[in-house]
Length: 80
Image 1: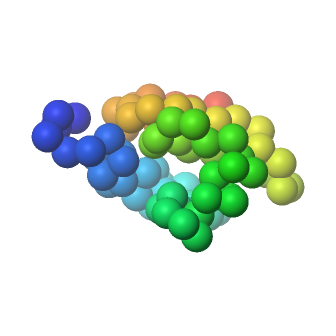
Image 2: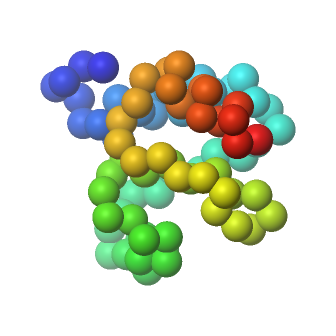
């Protein structure tokens, strides 16, 4: 990953690619600002970037920090 790009921005194209390869999944992103504080608190976000896999309304897996394509893709495959 390019060290001059923020971890969240570096992760975005990776998540978009994994999303395009898994059309049955919905991907969402959230910017934590004044409006996102309650959501971040609900999910216990303490570090960013942070990814979650949610099934039937429950978090089944989470991943903290920037990752490469293979790591994110493998993580999704393990949890879907």
